[in-house]
Structures are given as structure tokens and as C-alpha cells.
Image 1 (spheres, one colour):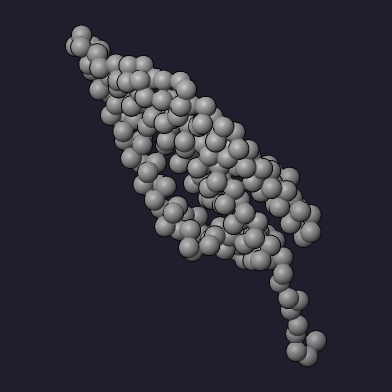
Image 2 (tube, rainbow, N blue to C red):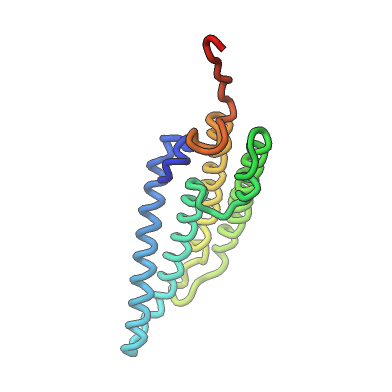
Length: 182
């Protein structure tokens, strides 16, 4: 967890972030193990074809878990070069705009992910014959989390300032300092 962004996070969501990180680690380990097993079984002449489905599931689930965490940690690709050069109201507007763009993407993932999930019950994976929907359910879940984490960043940024006190910009609602005797 980045100490500089702590002021942008709700403590209530810390356990969710931790669970997502653990899930991401499990998916990475599962993905690596299934790829290794797939290669080994093919080399010995007895391929396990179902391993490709397992590998794809681990990859998909890990990708979407990681996407949600990246949004919360501000580790994703964002339009920050211009934003970091700004101060004051311009900085606030730019920070909110960037997070609103990410929020919109999250909401689009919810809408279109749900549509894909529902349609996924009419298409089946080979050789398991499982509906492909099992690969699509993480999309709307990730979209909800991306939207939640974006909203968290907007609310906390407007409340506490987008840059940590040790950063280059002052919090948005910081009172003016007064000096006695000046």
C-alpha cells in the first residue's frame, strides 16, 4: 500500500483490497502451475486438454482482480503528467476528471460485462462443455470494484486533498494559516 495515497482510501475497503491481492496471487500461482503442467503433459505425450481452460480461467480472474487493485492504488495508466503539473483548482478539476473517466469505464464494464455473462450461457467451452459465462463473470464484478474505488478516490480527494500533505499541492479544503502578531 502506498503511504502517499493513504489519505485517499477508506479503511473499510482495506480488507477487500487485501483479499483481491491474495486472489491475484492465487491466480498467478495457479496460472503458472497450469502452464507448467500443460507443457510437461504435452512433452511426455499425454496432454491434458482441460488445462488450457484452467489456465485461461486463472489468467482472466487474475487480470480482473489486479485491475481493481490497480485502480485503488492508482497504479494503473492514468492521465497524470498534466495533472501533476497543475495546482489549486486546476489540479482538483483534473484529478476529478481523470477519476470520472475511470469510473465511466468501470460502469461500462458492469453493463457490457453483464450482457456478455448472460449471453455466455449459450456458448460452451471444449472439452469441458462448461458455459463460457464462467470466464465472463469477473468483468462486471471488476467494473463494480473499479467504480467503487474511483468513487472512493473522488470523495476522499475532495475531502482530504488529492496530494498528500508531504506532496506539492495543499489539500482542497485546507484553512488559511494565520500568524499571531503578523
